[in-house]
Length: 518
Image 1: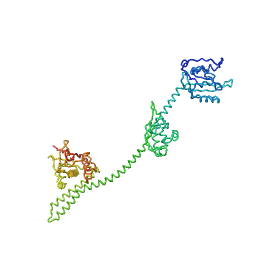
Image 2: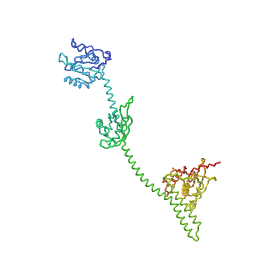
Image 3: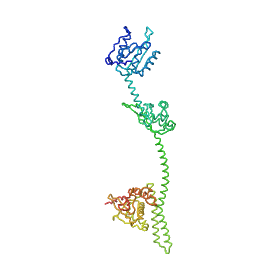
Image 4: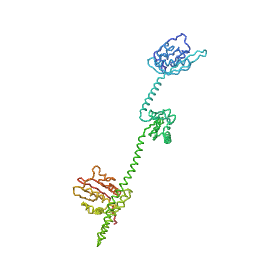
């Protein structure tokens, strides 16, 4: 079959003209008509045998008319199409049904191009004879474009099928138009089934209403959509997926389609749930354990002054029952009882401050007096352990703004820790307490011992709750002390000395200077 010639294509663009004389000297009238048509025309009789081909058909095929007559025109087809084409053409002739086919024919230059063939049987008004007119239109470019599009779609399908997540696309109205292999494998549904049942059918019933609402909002607003849903698997099991959908727009900003991805997050969701359960269990256990630790710590802190109260009360009784009564000694014992009672009260108030964050009742206090009074409260322990204390402070009055009992309790804690740190050392114990004013006007008290020092990896850990370097320690004293100091707006820190021992530093603010009138 010859290839058609476009209307803009001249005769000179085809193969050299082949002038074949008609079979009979008298040419039928249709010859002149079909020769004037700017396209490939073949004429066949009632049996489907070619009896004429116009000039354009001859030029396009590069063959003489004799080669095209009868069934010779079909010899120009692609060899793979000849048998099927002959069968189709004979069926049309026998049933007198129109021909509508796209076949590939060889041109005069040896190349093959696709032609769209249309043929209609016609009858002459004066006779019952049937004549077939076959029109060939060049559709090679369209066929190649369609084949390229199909190849591109197949390549896109293969690409989408290799993506390790479920993907699908939707029309602007939300109708699903494409799904990848992951969707088919996971859901066990084809594209037709999803289109028929609707994509919400595979979502867990508890989330369908929310999913429908979110989808409608995205379609209405043309905005990004993201949600977490349980999607039913082919075996009926639901798994959590993160669903994200984005609109694709053309150059005019109009949405042409939606692209959606489903990411399986079921393992992550279950891990999060297990973590929440574990955290809840740990939290309950921790609260129970912490309650026991705090109770033990409070009991430890209160036990020491209460023991002293008991000892001094017994001593007072003895002084008063002797003959004659030793009143001065009894009064001293009572004084110590009062002192220790204040210590118990300070412990209770410190614990309340730690957990309720109550503001401290601060008044101007002499820092040197606070230190010396606190040391005198534990003077008996110091003497028993033979721990000398050296003081180093300036002569002017060194005032701080603080809660007197709270700061004294901290000083007692720091002094006791320093004394205990020096026990068992081959060196003679010595505690130096240095008090000085800083450059910015604050008050700095340093407690320097020559004991074993602090753990070198992270010195600041000693202020963490329930962390202690003592064998029988609870590890809450320094934590409470730092909380109290910070509530005062001050600082409490620790460091190792360059040679031996450790130094704990207490920094507190000073009261505003009193203005005097002239």
